[in-house]
Image (cartoon, rainbow, N blue to C red):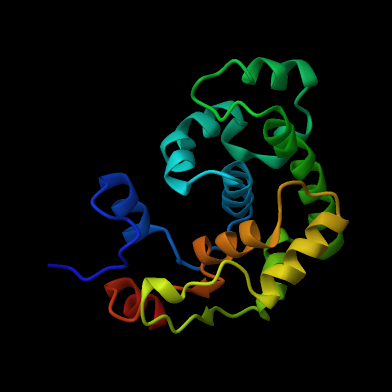
Length: 188
């Protein structure tokens, strides 16, 4: 039996996400925006809720292409509020557009969103050195700094907990427990 982190439980979708995506260092601009957008939708909810709706979000938000999302009209977003395949929270859905606009500004300033985001961890994955699932933090000094700066730049739903979850998901921090097969794979 493969040893892995306990949080995916027995859910096949969660296991696949854990085994193939969570914690893998991510540098693709569109994918970083997608992950951050989905993390923002998670605020106050469980990640599995968002994960189950991810394909619906990809369709609704034009495969998370920031330039296209930045041009979405209020009318289009209001229509999305009727879609049961999305989390129908007006502020969260509108935040995808406002965050796309802020994303594009960061690209202009830093050259890439990737360079900007990874600057919070000095361009290297932080080894969480987790012995068990109980010692996973909800925030870190890096996520605090990321949250503060993203908010200053106009991002919405980017508290420190959301930023830390984003850091975990995109491999800025390796929070797989030591016994998990992915910890060793990602460490090497």
